[in-house]
Image (cartoon, rainbow, N blue to C red; front, top):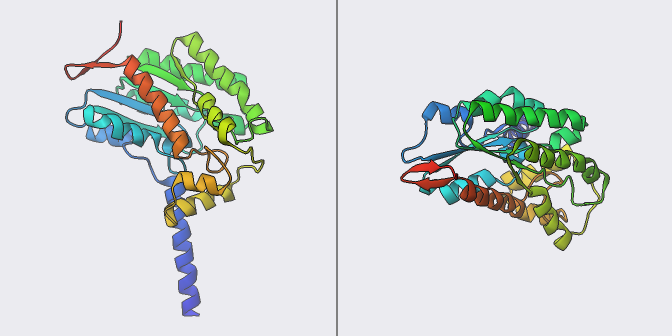
Length: 271
């Protein structure tokens, strides 16, 4: 009996730890941590990555961490303001956290959960425009909107068809309010079309939990997990593997290099 109880407790403890790592663990350098600590010595540029689980990166490749490794040694600090499950309405509710970081640049990657939750596209676009408008009025940051990556690797399937109007709204918003548009969906879809097999199974919580178990317990890479699931760029039909994370990191790196030029330890905005 004691052995059985011990095993049950260990199982519960292990599951709780896995759930924390997969869904609750905060990302590195959150807005709260950044504001408490302040910029690191030598920092000349602060970029905030604003979004959902694809930015949070507890169940997805950490493209913000990749940017930190690439550009951090040169004085560029990255704040991860991604939270699992968030929608545009959630981003509006915590916008002040981003404003308080006094960013030089802000990337916004959102839309996956709005589409999955059936938020009307008109409301999604209104929320997105309000997010950008408030950032423009409260900060001097340059802003980039990223299109939401595919919802599954069956690019002709219903999930991706439902996502398409949201990405159209992102493009339209970027044009209307005068901010950059970064084609994350388009670039990732290109890789899928070139190399994918269009598997038709759907995302589920159980699948996400199995992915987390493989990554955190078995120490498998996001790429290996995706391959094991018959996928090319996504691990569970939603979250990014390392290749997809690199696509986004490359897009953001290119945008930052075009948008923020560093001179004498300070960012200089192009005229």
